[in-house]
Image (cartoon, rainbow, N blue to C red):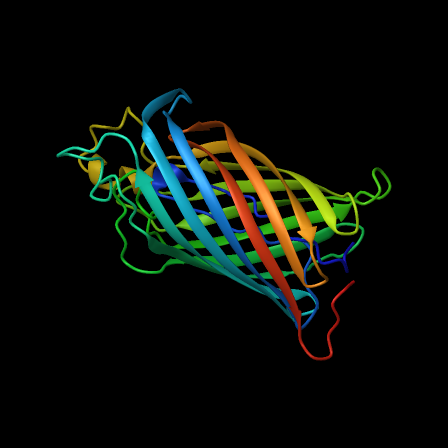
Length: 304
């Protein structure tokens, strides 16, 4: 399994109350030196329910979001890989639009813009029987975009991320299957008095139905350690200006998907996800469609 370049999971991790934060999931298994992959994923996300600090859902107007995530992964050495992704977001708030909207972008039309750039590095610490891959990454806003509103592009906060992937094949239990998970601790730029650092994680259980088709079950969770709670912190003096950026968002989401290898270098993937529970956030559900192209430098090898 360690030499197999698994088709990537495009599980969407959304923090929609904070705008829209997405990440294309990287892997515990690394590409070999000189190998890499370019992936472009389109996501269609719909939000109907908001969730308060107790986990109660309420309707505050629907949001429709279209996004495109472009990502690159490259094997710098046989045990070191670099990855980067950037997201282009177009959201529209379809709820109440009046003289005092939730934010200046909530005008009932799309306001497309780039969101944040994420750049990271992964290091394979162990390769068998358990694959252990620590990583570090940084998140940098691409420009000074608007952060107020249901359909804001994102939070516009810098982050430093560190964590670890763990994975292994499950041949002894279920042939042609594997499992992997990731834990991330994010050090987030402070906003006023709030420390917005958070822990998050995701997992994937995969099965190769054929040599060309793989199936997966996925999940993701997040815990933010501080921030504004809705609606009990409405008396904060800067609530209207910062609550989209500083919300104490927690969630658990589930999904699944399928990948198709069209050739040894070209693949397609389809994923769906939904919100199981949350607090101080939105409850999105969505569909992702993507295409991946693998490449190999001179002298390196691409596994069949």
